[in-house]
Length: 443
Image (cartoon, rainbow, N blue to C red):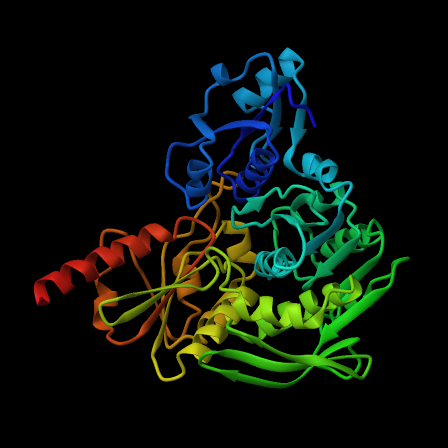
């Protein structure tokens, strides 16, 4: 780390990048960055920290910078290209993170699903007990002076997490995703096993995942779940409209009764992983109970608001397993209400590869609407459309446009769950505008 340089982030509004920028800023380093001008949900934290954000322009690159390049951008990006031509230090996001976690008790959280929620939960719990720095994939980052722990989200995409070697790892699951990169489940497993062999002290893995059960590594693997064969087990789970309550046992010994104000079975499992790590770091269980009960969630994960007589939920779910978990959480909290899913498919390759699974998960809602597929910077077109997915959905499948969200006005005293990793929020805003105008008319 260098106090004399200015750390320039190319793609600073990316969820991991904005979090990393906030950490360096908190640590007293000079930080700036560039990105698209369109507003993103990660932007507010950068604004509050008064971090300078400029539009992309190669003129942003000059002597005295250390460049951190977002993984969404190739070396042909004008800013990255110029920085390399000038001989400036250039790090990829994951490379820089690998250096940053050194010197702390580091805990990396990986998995095809659940890593952001689990990283957020672990960060919250440990921060309430000891100085903790953290990087969460919802754009939240904090660099705490004299931190004991460093908690970070470890991204398996393109094997980026292999740039890090944490003390502990939490692995929530191994599932086939990112079909534009991984060739299949065996390829994903290979990446996780390689990372597992870079972990220094221990791994905490979900016990019901058949791929995680196959892990071969030199450090101990502790499994968590609801089965008697798990090292950390949740028993007597009671799910209600206010959250979940459960007992936790480790090797047959009761560690205590825990309560969370979060919804869905996946959040019980995420909490178990956090309890397991904390137990091994000899954190007081009463303090863990207090912090777990106080956690409200992370950005874009089951984020709720009320408008008129409707409940609107915003969620990042973009894989069949995540959709299933989000709808399960909505059913738990709102058992007597109609659940309407509005899903924006994310990338053509994922939509093709997981088409049948998407239909199966979405049919868990009472009614399903789709938007057109969100194409990423990596994929701008493909031989599939939302109509192909709609044809497999039995609970509807009508395709909505931003210009016409009126079909959702047919529902009253119900729950609308907007899901997707792209720009599904623009559809939410269009729907909310309709609702607010109707409310004004009715008043």
